[in-house]
Amino acid sequence: MSVDARAVLLKHYDENSDLFRLLWLHSEKVAAKAADCIARRGLKVDGEFVREAALLHDIGVFRCHAPGIFCSGRLPYICHGTEGRRLLEECGLPRHALVCERHTGAGLSLADIERQGLPLPHRDMLPVTEEEKLICYADKFFSKSGDPAREKTLYEVRRSMAKFGEESLARFDEMHSRFG
Image (cartoon, rainbow, N blue to C red):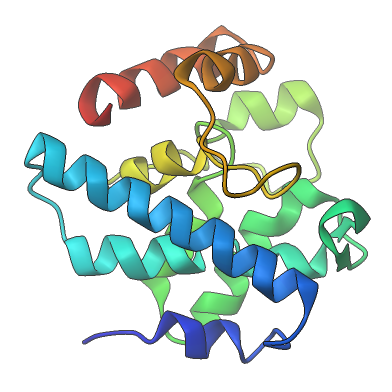
């Protein structure tokens, strides 16, 4: 069953808003990066699902407080994945919902959440399937702040991942060995 990701997003976003335009650009870039990885590496993954889930992975951002990217919600930005999971589960998209929750950073382990005192449910939020890992990987190359159309270099991504600890960097490096 094919999912119209744009229609799902437009249930929560004004198509003419700066936030929607930014979210859509970012999500399209992530989807294109993932598709490129699939083509270059000959990955045996569900390409249609990857595209849909990549377009939906940040659906929860509007509920978060991040004025620099037009988000005026009340929650800390780190909560956008769990909020996205909630929204997509309500839409009957449980597989897509897990991508939302598991794409933050290089995934978040329970130990990461506890050590950093993150305002998240206390459970592992690590990408499990190849599709989840691929979207998580592709997402690291694009930011919604600054120039959202610019792809970060591998050096920039690794430097960013290193700020969150050796485990996070190791998870990213493992994804890079599969998809990069």
